[in-house]
Picture 1 (tube, protein in one colour):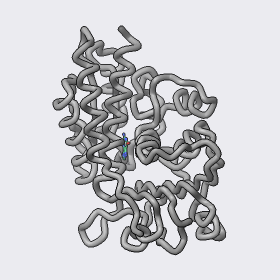
Picture 2: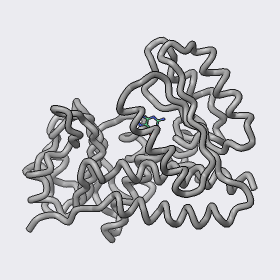
Picture 3: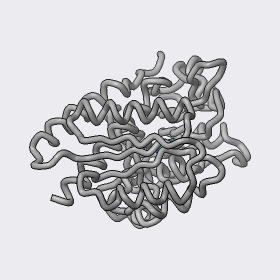
Length: 279
Ligand code: GUN
């Protein structure tokens, strides 16, 4: 039997519909400011999708496009301005930034109350401590929505996260832990990845290596969430070898059309939550 394919586009649309209805009830529009530095094609696409989502659900949005040559001081000045702008509830600086700009310094400059990416140490620290601030890390929260859509009860399940980035792997492991999963955080130095995955009822693949995870490595019936966005011969490819994994998994997300739409839906959810908290 082949796996059920989790339709990320449809699930995200359902969330956006609810956010649109919720936003219409508010006396002010939730506002999102996105800052894009340079012309990286992938970043441009992501920023465009964020702008489009805001338009669809009736949020106010601003996109600030800055040249690759912008100085760190100029970028800090813009972030400071957006922090103070009462129309703006969420401030997002698209990563990666050019090498001459210190990413940590920019993240630290974003008002933690407007940090809808959940990148600021105050928010990641709150997440670590299990405190609920109304802001969740977008991609990990999107992965959780996709897992929940299968109807699987998470409590007591074994979950393997592959990849230990600050944006996905580490926060995804924490969210699964908060949902009472037994979590293994695998990475490039894990001695026997297949042995770890064989045990896992849930797999979140976020290593950034095309086709790293094959069907033979998975536990039959596993829920497999593929966060990978690798370009192979111009095509977007996940970290999971879909053709073989679909033969073993119980549920699997496609790339594209799996996690990506959920990341944006969760960003909108965070922006609405910040706006609500302010009202
Ligand atoms: N670059 C890749 N993913 C993300 C994200 O979720 N947020 C930001 N700001 N930049 C990214």
